[in-house]
Image (cartoon, rainbow over the protein chains, first blue to last red):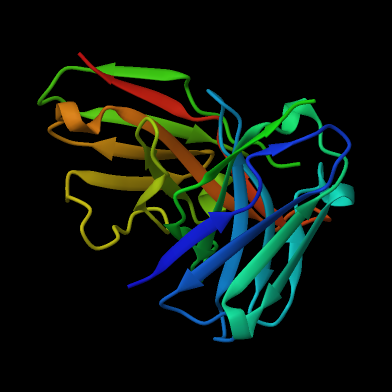
Length: 119
Length: 110
């Protein structure tokens, strides 16, 4: 059974750096073809892809947020970490991590974590 | 960057067929995935690679993709199908390949 769970702060102040951790089980990020991505969703709005990391440490970022994002993995801990710098109230959203398939479909999702940016 | 266009809303009576479109330039050349999201829940993959269904997804959910439009079809719509639906592709055509989501469609069951 594949599960993913996001963790991190629920409240961050403007200009701070957000660090979110995705802890997963049921698969290995050292298996060829496997990837884990981050997606966010502001309240009442659409899904927005943020970043993706593959088994071979290849990384992809949303062009509009690339300068603020860093994605890393710790295969031994079954974790993927996303950092986002210079947080702003518009970054208030539910942040999801999800496992990708061979054609970049997000087959399994975490429950999401709501992050509020406010002073 | 690649853009996916979905109608904001679709309404259908129970038992009827709902069709949700996803428009994109030459989307027929890409693999399209569809997600269902109910309020307060994470998205669920309902169709992948244009027309395949993950295990556990009813056969009432089907997909097609050709030209500039992909379509999610829900047959014999039930009240429980009321949700937001998102299409998604991998865009490899730009200098920065990545995931693209449509703006979402709210399906209302009348």
